[in-house]
Amino acid sequence: MPLELSQQARQRIAAVRARYPEAQAACLPALWIAQEELGYVPDEAVALVARELGLSAAHVFGVVTFYTMYLRQQPGKFLIQLCTNVSCWANGAYDLLAHLEERLGIKRGETTRDGMFTLLEVECLAACGQAPMMLVNDTYHYDLTRDKVNALLDELRVKGTGHA
Image (cartoon, rainbow, N blue to C red; front, side, top):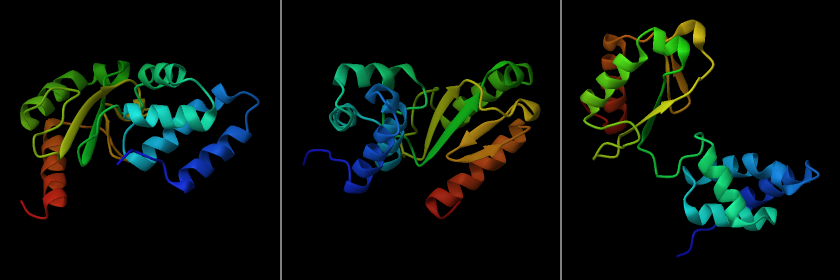
């Protein structure tokens, strides 16, 4: 069955498009709507957004591959985005990234075999005063240490599977 956006998502994209004089200006929010609905932006979704906006698929593909906020692959149940920008870097983010890779058994950009965790290295999540930090799905976690990361991973695994 071919991938389609819901009627509600298409209406939201049309409403966003109506706010801009040029369709290209609506591309970022339209892609965000597609990602909210699908969980990521596969090639089929690129074509759908292009169709909804009246843009070329090549243009939309260029946008979706330029910005790291768009996920090109289905993420795990818990999307971990660790900031490694200046403040986080200076406060040990790369040590935490190595620790997360070791603890999860994956490298950045990968998903655990059980589909539970996806680990991404990202630039600035706007919490420099509480670095190092990471975003798990839609929740910020600040002032991280290895112990805090371990406790959070244990909590998420229980939440994700229903048992320890």
